[in-house]
Length: 309
Image (cartoon, rainbow, N blue to C red; front, top):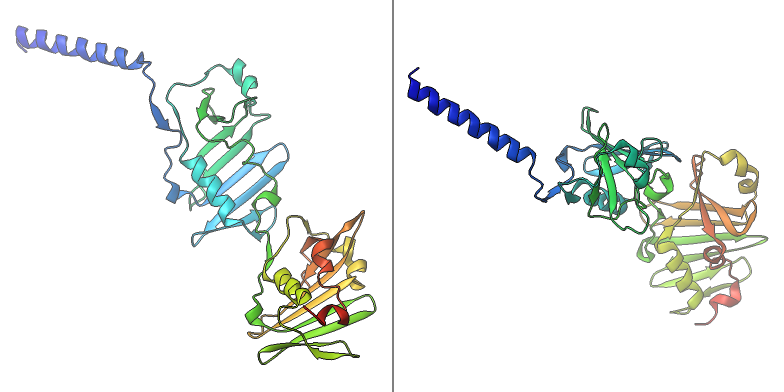
């Protein structure tokens, strides 16, 4: 190599070193995505905190809870959380990279919420700790194995919890009026049936039989109660605790549908909570639902309630 080429090579090496040093010391703030993971690769999400663990899997584009129970998820809630988290942005400059400072953000391993993303082969794509800051709506986060804490631009701390009740589908049944053929109700020593007769509805209780007036308020309340049956509280794997009560229920509701997709509900008073009922659907013993008494009372009607509007 000639002397001049050696000089040029030396200058180039010096310039490269200067560039690398400058880049390493560049403190210019930029807004970047916290995760580099492709959202379409994420097939499973695990959330672990001091209260427990929940696992949500995606199959054919639908999210389902797989641990600690097998149950359909609240698709809207899961998608909202996942979209906010996976797309969260932050400054490229961390709040801190000191292990001693982690306690300030409740983001030490022992107290933070751990979110893990998996791909279809059950390979870990990302493991991230979620913390909290008093008086701050944004979310401190750090990748597992790193002490660098970043502030995400989304409020996620109180959204991401292991409580399975947060993530499960709250719908128990959806029964449209047009799909109903007959409604049978028993409560106490009383009972009645409401059946479709061409374009009208017929009330029968063994003593009375009459066409229910159009726009009758009691009938409208029943149809409204059946259109979207939901529950925000559940008893999983506790059938033994309620078996005796459900064997002699306070209220029974049977709905015969035109497509034979029938629904049968048993309701008994909750233990230690007189304003709520425990509800069983179609003899399911794995998952029981909690229903408020105001919903149950709309079915506890008599002949007189169906005589006028």
